[in-house]
Length: 76
Image (cartoon, rainbow, N blue to C red; front, side):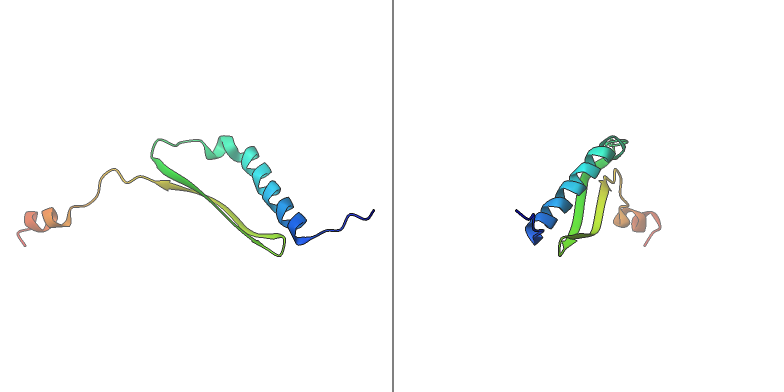
């Protein structure tokens, strides 16, 4: 019996490949998380091919500029 490659098989292969890469990179991705709010994992799979794959850390801003207070300090 011939093993036919279908789009379902190719997409499954792509997802497993991304998962394997995440496992390999997990220690590095998990470093320095004290200011990280979220970790986003994006991928684009088209016709059974990984077009793009990205892991993004989104950081917390601990302080922000109070523009109204700055205006008052400058006498505006």
